[in-house]
Image 1 (tube, rainbow, N blue to C red):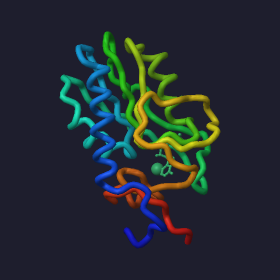
Image 2 (image 1 turned 60 degrees about the vertical axis):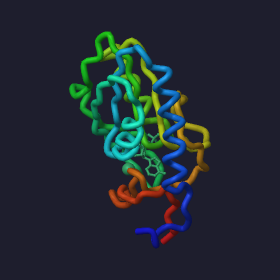
Image 3 (image 1 turned 60 degrees about the horizontal axis):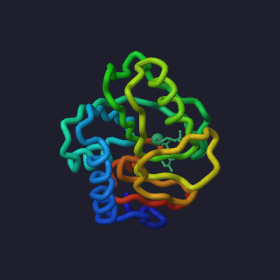
Image 4 (image 1 turned 180 degrees about the horizontal axis):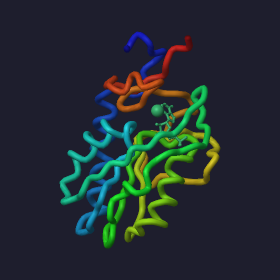
Length: 176
Ligand code: IMP
Ligand code: MG
């Protein structure tokens, strides 16, 4: 799998050290609050596991399976998930976790549904990666691991046609 990469953007030690900082900030911000973390699968699976084990708060974890449709590495704007699967968040604060903020379609659709259907006390979002670009939807993340250029990356949960999620590093695919 490594040999399919053009270059490595983020090594395992760089990711781990950034997660230490991110987790410390989230821990301080949510101290004493009833927090539910909602991880957007599949992409945030590995990020979720590594980040949440660094947060010593009595939080609850839930997952939402979301499909965003990509044509040629660009979002089609279509985002599918089961609204009935959103957790009960009455009197709780919500932190959404996603692997990457790209066009913004995914996060915008989930934030809208959550605010409308389950009305938590607050809604924030945390992404491991944020692409520096003009987004189709004007949405920002509250916690960001790394800003990266506008290129397609894989590894550490991120896939290309369902491959490379189990790469421990994040890299740019070699052009075929
Ligand atoms: P958005 O809806 O365009 O913001 O993208 C969100 C979803 O698209 C992410 O959760 C990823 O699953 C996928 N995605 C966006 N950019 C990339 C990338 O560079 N590599 C792999 N997946 C990506
Ligand atoms: Mg994907």
